[in-house]
Image: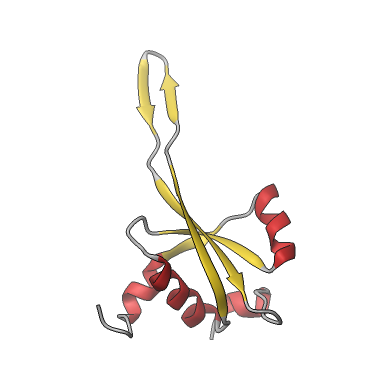
Length: 103
């Protein structure tokens, strides 16, 4: 793998940000939560966040989330598995509305 990744791959790694009670609590520690591609690794996620939001990343922790089983009548289905990334930024860095709009 090359040191500098393809720009289209970088912009497709992050699917979106996650907003929940838990993610709001970790925002106090300069940590933000994103839904990412299941095959993305920590290095790719770090490069994508730094490129998209123009911030410096301190660390990335990933978590594979198993899809829930759901029943509709007699049929039992399953939601898709997905990957979550907790991204901690360097001190003094933050994501706000100006960072999220892009350039």
